[in-house]
Length: 223
Image (cartoon, rainbow, N blue to C red; front, side, top):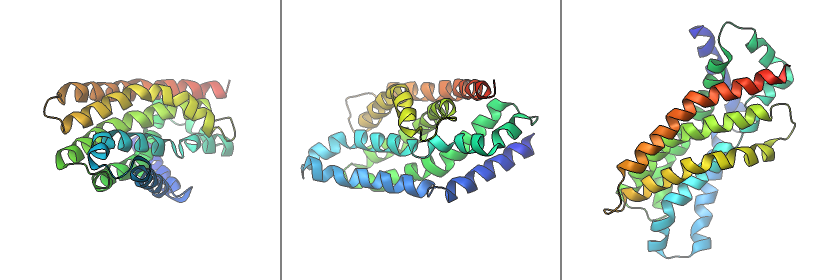
């Protein structure tokens, strides 16, 4: 079963890199959002530094949603999803493997680029590391929550907008605690530990529950 999951992971990574640019498209979208912020806000470096963590988190959230609508839709259209259901691997593990592949291609490049893009928003070194650490912990939750929306819209063509409507409200708690922890990293008064631990808890809950919810939605497609 492990060989099947590893093969599925490598397949998903290769497909994600070929279809729609994969992580490159998300990274470019991330860069565009961060680049236009100083033009909209103005040259006030103090203001940019104060709202920088929020801008980076919002950009990462929107960039993560790119391509999520095809996470299960392509397999549903070409019949691969039916073949995956017939394997010995539980559908929940298959969903988790596909989420891991999507995060590797989309989320990991955003995390690596966050310190560089944070310099464009005049963030201090402590804030850069805070944003990077919170994105490392929080982006898996965004991917898992997005997988639930992707499973619900797998049978709908061009369901990207519907997916965003379903997923964005679920991502609000992750966004709140991610921004709070990242902002506390550059503020000596606020506590970094409390929101960061809550962010870790949200990610663990998402990893534990989202694959089961997405698998249930996928099974409902065949009924």
